[in-house]
Image (cartoon, one colour):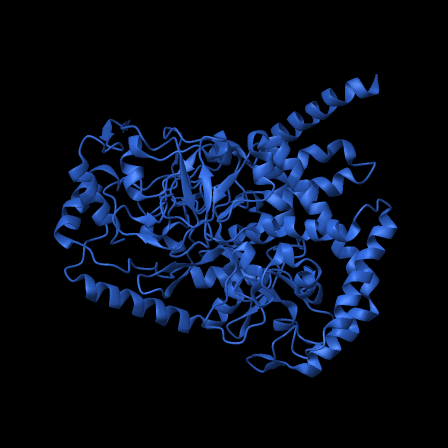
Length: 610
């Protein structure tokens, strides 16, 4: 009887929570708005070479001015107390070279690359470790975890074979799910046929300590790296090894439990929301992530593991699939919302694909939490917000036909600018794209996020960080307005973000593939939808200058870079949408340019200049 009644009871509780909390807290009060026309339109420059040089200079000046902020964004770990023990991470290729590849660049298999600008770093860009930021570098073992730059520093291969870094762009090579899978595969290799939990743990402990014993290079783990006044030399490395050995049983057991729990949770999400591609997505898609991902997986697994909360575990899962391409994050001011006239709610902005987390500090925190570690370093988000607010977008590195671009500017003004303008908070439901990503955060997750994100444990109005030589409170106010009692601004209610933002388009040339799920390889295919390929190569670094996007053709593809992406294999990655002319507020907008390709080419030429 009780079992049959529970679903009804839980459902009733959810409805009561939804209605009562909504009315009591003003959950239903916020709605993002769109600026009124005329829309801003970027002007085509008179001299393209000069424009390129000027933008590059602006980027260099910005990065130099914000070096400390950039380090937090690109090089520092998302948590100072959690992650994978650095020694374990560096020993993985010793344990399973078949999964990790070249020992000197073993993380390249998951799409992380060494940054030539950070000489001597022990890890590629995208991996940070706690010794870089801990007040006393040698007080504990070093934990390694991802950095913001792992997702948001990309690169393009130029015609001369050199790479151009895209700071604030998207790392189309990065596969965070693939990383989790490889760890579990490594553990399973060590387990063999053993099924007993304690014996499995002991096998891993023995294997790791044996690999550590066999490692004789005094600079193997840190590469004798220097960062500012910190020197990770042989003496530092030896002390780290001693600390690790002292607590090896606990460190290794915690590592096993966390990695298996998170990946098992991800498999639950894959089975529930991606049944048609669950085997494929269990290995991950490079350049993509699930919007709630490992945070939901961790919460789900944690609730499921305890008798008192097991029945509620499903509430931690998102409402639908939420896979998206990694976004570019430069020029955030053009995304960020503003306050209305009486400073009571946010309008004219929204940020991500659907704007459900409007405030930049909480967007950054959500990205940190999504990586699966609840104890996050708020200073990373605060410094990243400072860096990204006015970070100029990368400029198109090739030639542009300026006369044709000027024709395209007029077409853009007439057909695109009203929606793709800065700080447009309107959410569009008419585009025909898969709606999964827009529906991920239901009422339960929204309420939980509002309570937890604004708590003392994460970033309340009293939370402090050191920045620019002073103590600041990054979650105390936004654009001069106090956030005290404003937890509803952390995540907006589902009805507000049930669709997609028409984001501004700075640096659009470097954002392919297009649509939120990366299902359209080039700008040409966006404008001429009848020619969109169903299957194409994704995550290559060479560029298609004609169609504008990364090389996507299967012809002459040697499979050493990129992977085949089949947009017909699941509704979650369908290439439908933004493909039919529409009418909004009595005005017609052209989206399908298949019947006027000359205009399409002009529009593409203009889009290169953004």
